[in-house]
Length: 269
Ligand SMILES: NC(=O)c1ccc[n+]([C@@H]2O[C@H](COP(=O)([O-])OP(=O)(O)OC[C@H]3O[C@@H](n4cnc5c(N)ncnc54)[C@H](OP(=O)(O)O)[C@@H]3O)[C@@H](O)[C@H]2O)c1
Image 1 (cartoon, rainbow, N blue to C red):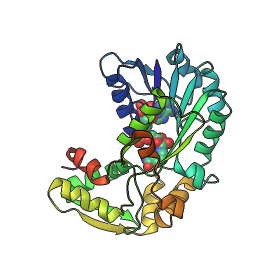
Image 2 (cartoon, protein in one colour):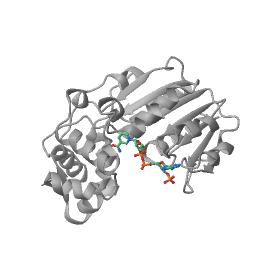
Image 3 (cartoon, rainbow, N blue to C red):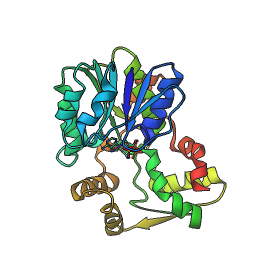
Image 4 (cartoon, protein in one colour):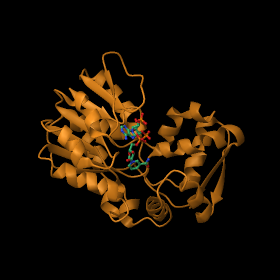
């Protein structure tokens, strides 16, 4: 049995579907109730309250773990006996560990857990463009800072496929995979790609750094806002680079942002 935390999220939902379609026994975990495919068990638990996870882990062979809650050691104590752990970390844990302390802390705990572990370090998600859904639906505009800085954003469906391959297959223990899309795409190009998928132009509005900072502070702690703005505005060579790891694991190139936009066009209509 495979336990998937974050099961209602962009990655977790796709992962639960993929594992269930492959015939795996799956327990889907989230705090809120979730709609899950037939045959999948749902368990409500909060990673901030590790003991709440315990009933989901009885008899589990593998765990897909999200970075949530404050105490990865307590979470992993509940997962003692689970042979394989796949952690959804973040590129920032490698490129800016002083800022992305939380994923870096989870990585360390997973490495020390004694289980076979694999760490997934995705860059920015294509699905962050859902933040534009309302403004695109109502005014056909999309606002973001650093409109001409390209980053190889990744389709969460590709993260889910890599996670499924790692959870089910051999040869991934001890590995850290950097997960990116196939090419850098600027925010301006992402807005245009959504427009192309809609069949109507989407106007791109470049925000100042300060405007973006104010908006991001509503949903993220300040150090993470500063780190994220640094990645978006002045990415390092490693943060701009396209990683070969999705293709290494899946045997095919990662999906493009345009493919993500085409699949998710109803959110912007
Ligand atoms: N977005 C990016 O650009 C990016 C880049 C690198 C890494 N990441 C990492 O990827 C992760 C997953 O992204 P996503 O887009 O799939 O996220 P998402 O769509 O926001 O989903 C998060 C999922 O985690 C669950 N969850 C959140 N806190 C929880 C807790 N304390 N206990 C149990 N479940 C909890 C949520 O369900 P409930 O709310 O019902 O619990 C939901 O199922 C992020 O959390 C982040 O660490 C994201």
